[in-house]
Length: 245
Image (cartoon, rainbow, N blue to C red; front, side, top):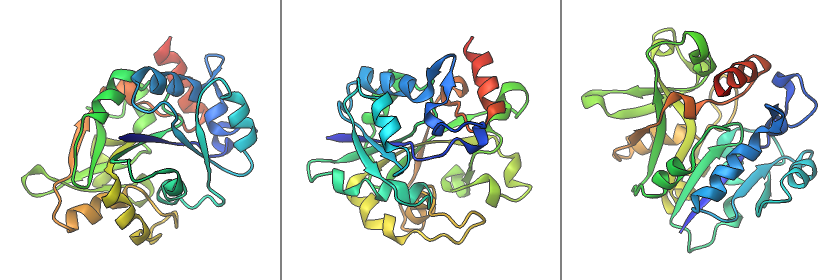
């Protein structure tokens, strides 16, 4: 059985909004509703787990009352790894695989979510998108993590933008935030994350390097850049509305 975890605890500070980020309207509709429609249409998990904060649980659950969902609370904003760990108690022994999505990814398609569900991994699989450059609407990806490959073109790690050096920032294979995990491997390793980075956060993406160091081969599945667009600022929202028109 596969469960879906949606990360939705973020505030709307960079969106210049008092609303939680995932409720900021895209073309007049809360952006998370587009994602929830895709999750429902995929048929993968009829009751996804949405990770929220204590301050936004009520407004998000009320906005999404037409959907079936469970809500896990992230008491403190300590990073994506910590957010997923907060959903641990909602996953029983029947769960084999976990798909993690960002609540600010309104263009993800149901068929892509179904394809993620077909993946089988001993540890994890990342979902990336390939860009030729960061020009035009591709600028929405500039501040996302970079997929770093090493010997034989194998994925070694994901470097978040704020931790990337100048050479790494030139890499145009981008982490889309979507990640797929073997449940047992995930929760055996998620407590090994540390916050030794510029954000002092527990990054879910650090699990890629943990898997690599353990000798696992980490696959990267590519999706179209249009589908991979995330929205983290008012400028990126404007770009997304233009692309979706």
